[in-house]
Image (cartoon, rainbow, N blue to C red; front, side, top):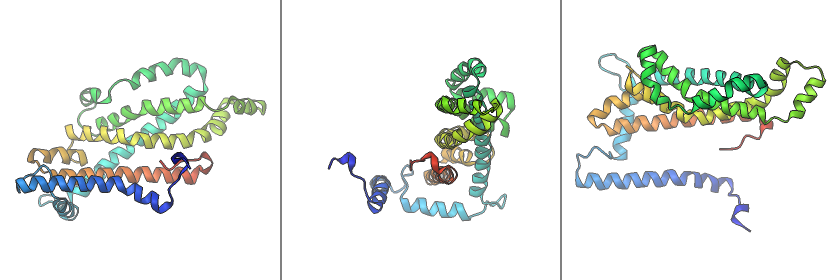
Length: 271
């Protein structure tokens, strides 16, 4: 039997999934041990035990000045910004993508503009956003929205264009208006794609959020990472990086499960 036809069982698939993580952990542990053997005061690659100790302290110890646990305060601030920014981008992308995909006049007017807009590096406009909106929350939200909305619009509009035209013809034959076709035909078929597109946008969304928090913020995961980098506190930085990665994974997992539950007919894969 050819390898392309062989599928691992559940236990084998689980072990194969853990294999890259184990290899990465072993490589880091060996590198850390080698550097600490040469210089016990080395801060570049702290020992895994040091990272675990730092994580426990950050999670449970309150700040002496404010009395708050800064780890959870930063997490809440970043999640609030990320959630609101992604929600605004998803709604905007869905409405605009449907309009471009369904209506030729809208497509002729907006598709070129959206294509050009998607080529603008979002981080390049960050200084403009700070000048226009100030250093508050609006500029951070705007960066997340600007960063992922063009991709969502292009992806969803193409999904609408890929819908078989026979469905629209049948709906019109039954007397459906343009609004009914958009809401009863196109929208249900686009919703699974919306969730998948949001999943693909989470990585860039985190990038734009961390960048905005690093430049101008008084709280947040990105703010804390760039605050402690001046002290070469790699144990703190790695703790926050691992936590951000875990949060991103949980978001992706939740969206995938949501899609499988709401739209089982869409054939959502396991990626």
